[in-house]
Every structure is written in structure tokens, then in C-alpha cells.
Length: 479
Image 1 (cartoon, rainbow, N blue to C red):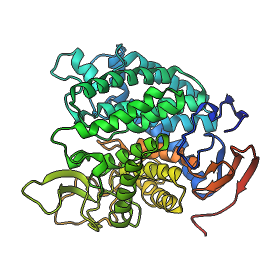
Image 2: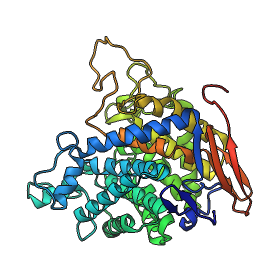
Image 3: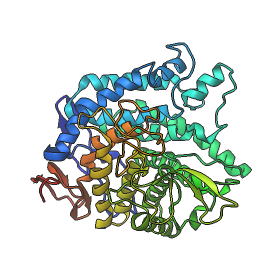
Image 4: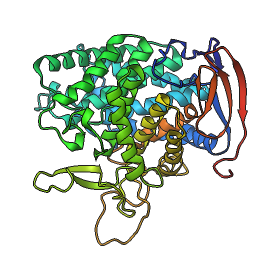
């Protein structure tokens, strides 16, 4: 990676020299600020995201009477009083917003926002318990003795919250060079380490829904160089096979190495396979690679919309063709070619997850098919999920919207400023904020073009070659 520092308007930020390169990656990312969108579609999207979406989301997370997310952290930290309110996955969604805010602040030299981010990090640290546990619903519930306790219900999304904490803290280290957020994440990872080793000993395990922590733990490994985080991610994935009475909804009815088709909850599936691909970047595992290729083919050839949307059904059932033992599945991958237009679900988070998965597949084997999916999904589903002013959002992304239907759909036909399930807006915000990361990757002696857009880039290859590059295009408006 680069041996020089990149200067921003407000000081010096460090390139990714401390990020551990994955041994089984055929290509690697550039430093976070090596590429700048200069004009056209992505420059406009990034500007709207920075000036409109990021502050709007901050307002929503700060509002006590809307999301209650920051207020939950303040209650845990002893800075406020009251009970828990909002969604159980609000913590993780706030961490996703922190990623978007970090990118936006660093790229624009917004020192005020960077200072606010540090204040939020201090707040999260105060909310964290001594043993490393951090999930606001359970901390508040246990303190108020109202029957709520940790790890009692997988649908409380505790480990999902952990995973996004890990990822956000690694990005913070990558951009600022500071260790304060990373220290909180490592303390939380220590809690998971104890939990998973206990599960390994007693043979009992639960699947964490929307398993963002696989990617998060492996990012901790790359950022710190501590092998225990890679090993912990490997153990967490292996423990899935110990789940008793597993569900297709969580992709744990069958052992992982027996997966051939993509089924169940679309976000949970895409996060799972993105995490497995991340592990394959660190350790050679032919069986896991075979699973990834099989389910990827099933997704892209038989269960994905022309827009890149995925997870077609509001509610599905599995296994195929056997109603005596069927299991209901929410926002589901259905049967092959079961792709309705008016009732297409295509949750935005599933599409963001498919982009993360595709990018990791490209790192494993740099083939155009993966960036074809990234580009198609980013342009046609992810960007369509946010309004032109950057303040209103779709949760689902149907292909055709009809005002008059003989049945009622759960989500509105128009974009909303705030959605009860507010996971998608910060996911979109961080995807747009990080979009320049998809412009190029590098191998030992080559530069790989990923997503098109007018940009300027400072490139250094691992073989020592370095140069400045400028791309001029009006794509996607013109070829």
C-alpha cells in the first residue's frame, strides 16, 4: 500500500499501511481517500449524501420522539433517564450512520462533524458495560428489572449491533488513526470471545440474525493484526452447524457446507455469504468457496431482478413443495424465477448486502460478473431507494407501483422521511459515502477498473509503481 500521507483540508490522515492484506485476495482496495469523484452522477450522489442525507439521519437518530436511538445510549450512559424505546437494531443502524458520517466529514474537512463523532464515541464507551457487552435494550432492561435480559431472543439483534460496531470502529481507525473507538470494539469482541468459546464447549449455539459480525470480526483482524479475531470469526461461522432446530429463515436448517441454493430471509442470507467470502479471503477453504459459487449462481441466474433487487417475497415458505413441514420466511428468497413486479419486496438492505458480497467475491476472483452486479444494483436499486433531495427513503423496492390494489401492502407507495424499520437509510448513506471505494482495486502489477465515474485517483501498486489517474465520463447518462 501507499507509503505517503494524504493531506485533507483539516490536517493529515493516514493511508491503509496498517491494514493487513488478505492473503487469498487477488485484488486489494486503495486507501480510503485515494479516489475522488469529480463530476457527474456519483459526484452528485456523494454531494447530496454529504449535505442532505447524513445530517438528516443524524436528526432522526437524535430525535427522542422519533427513533430514540441516541437517547437510548444516553440512558445507558447515565446521562438521561427513562426506558428503552425504538427498534432493537437501532444501535447497529446508528453505527452504520457513523460510517457514512466519518467518510463525509473526512472527505469534506468537516471538523465540526468529526468532533461530534468523537462525542458519540465517548457516549458509546460510557454506555458499554465492564464485561464488554453493549446493546441498549438489554442494558436498560436489565437495569430496570423489567424481564428483559441479554441473549434471550435472537430477534433482538444484539450480535448484529456488535458487528456494525466492529465495522464502524475499524473505519474510524482507518480514517483517523485514533484508537478510542477501536478500544470499545475490542472490548465488545472480548465478550463475544467468551460467549463463543463457552458455546463451543457445551455444544449449544444460537444463530445471530443478520450476521454482520462475521465481516466485523474479520475487519478487526485486518485492522489490529490480532489472529484471535480471525479465529473467532471462523468459530462463529462453524458454530452455525450446532444450532438445534434451525430455520431456513436464518439459513441454519442445513449445515453451511451443504448449502446449494439461496433461500430464506434475503438480508440474513447476503450478510452470511458476504461474511463467509470474507473468511475465504483470509483462509483457503475449498468447501466454503464451493458453497459461495453455488448460492451465487442460484441468486444471479434465477432469483435476482433485472434491477439487481433481491428477496422477492413479503412472505415465503420452505422447504420447496412440502407443506407438511413448511417454515414461514419473511422478506424471502422464493422459488426459482418467482419474481413478481407489483409485490416485489427487494428490501434495500438486501441490495446493499448483495453489493458487499459481490465485492468480496471480486476480491477472491476478479471477474467482470461481480462488478456487473455491483453496478447494476447500485444504480438501479440502491440509488432508487433514496429521493433526489436525500431525505426520503424506500424500505422495499418493487418494480411497479400501483395506487389501487385489491389488497393492502405494509409499506407506503411513496418514499418516507422516517421508516419504523430504519435500517435501510443509514445503509444507503454509507454505501453512497463509500462508493469511490468501488472505482478501482489493485493487484501486484495491475489496476482494475470497477465502477465507472468521473474521478481523480492517486494510485500506487504493490510493485512500487505510482501515478495519478483521471477518468472523464458522463456515464451512466452517456456510454
